[in-house]
Image 1: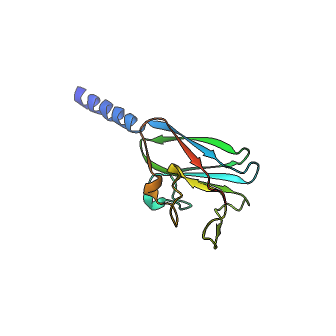
Image 2: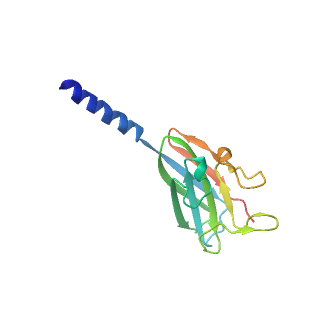
Image 3: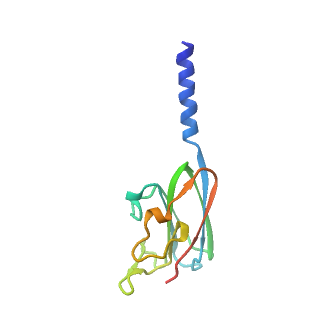
Length: 141
């Protein structure tokens, strides 16, 4: 009987440890104040990266200042963050044809915006093992 109770308590204790969450602060610079909304998406897997429904957690807030900080509680693991400012309030990141690319301010974690085409998940990925702040500088159009 004692062994069964001990095993149950050990399992509860280990699951509580696995569920421990850490605060991720996403600091965003370069917003156009008082224009549209800011979309922030946190991804925890590559196959969902940059997809509308692929994020692990997300938030939409009104752009009031040139800088913004948002907080997310996340379990330990690997993540990547995408941010864009929806200037025309249509709910999506508008793209332009020439030169090809986003037509609204955008950015990703690790500020990897130096390649042709969309940023790769592995370039934006970082680890959460404790409280962390990620600074994202938006690319202006």
